[in-house]
Image (spheres, rainbow, N blue to C red):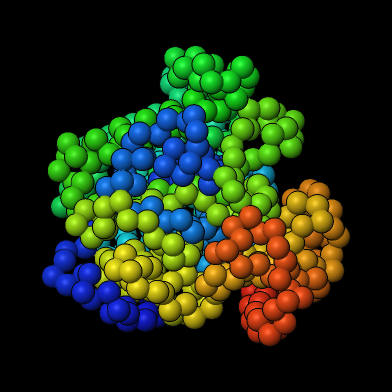
Length: 468
């Protein structure tokens, strides 16, 4: 067993946790699901009955954030509790690329496994370029005893994928849709694969609704009643199919008598893809709801996502929570709930959010923070949210997104770029980030700018440099 330096858990949530045994954990992560893409978050057409019911019986977070506006970075933040630039995951990772989640990073799966949990991952991985190779760490090297995964997207599409790998062995051609296959793997592990003498952590990362989108025609046909565009109907059906996969998983937890002692957390890796932003994105009809921006934006449309938590007997049924939380908060929160200590030999950016379940504010050491160097043209690259307020910053690098993913040229900018223009928004009053208050709130601007500059420089200094 690995040894770490540890910080004793905080006991602010002792009322919530008193006399409780550690729960099981299920994390469900979607790919490119927009803030407004579920019925319970306001979509007028897409049917998501299982997730709506989960939100009704559990807690819906109105201000839930991904750790980045792009997939690989977001996943690194979720697993490590660290803002992704600290880990060197600056962008999505192409196949055969040098970037990977380093073996020195300590993940939530590793912490829970070493504390006695059985662990499994099912679905997209996207935390290395050399997938299923001994040249870079694989899911099994980051704490998962069982894994069933793809490097990036399901290929050739969600329908009948042929690029899944199970515990290092290629599976080959499969029949069905990716989300159902991923859910089936998870359910089969729950029924037959896990060590039933242990608690478990099950990590489910769906490919849906990322392109290339493919959905069951029976669902597609139902949406042709509300849209004339078959591609839009495909997207609507894609989200519904993912919801049905969630329903399959929830039913299995009930059938196996695991539901009452399992924390289920559902979210998305970033905001929705822009229609036809790249070749092959012809079915990207996700919506950010009232938010500004989309995927790849530091504005809330790129990072604010659905967030549903269900913990029977611990969450107040149907009670929405507006306290801002982030995917980087999962590691300290789950560790607190499981009585597992967190590492002290590295910076953690997440905060235990269990107090929010009791209606209390969180005591963050530093505000929520994002940094994405390839943000959409002329848009900010860095952001910080502190309570009701959000500060975004441009940089002195190119305004156009740098091409070619992480490379020697972009590494220089990541390590040296300085912040320049700042915009200030009251997110609580101005959810669409339409009114820049930087000129009318000079004192707040000064205080938040100093805090953002300090955090940015700290993260920039720690950010590792890749060799190619």
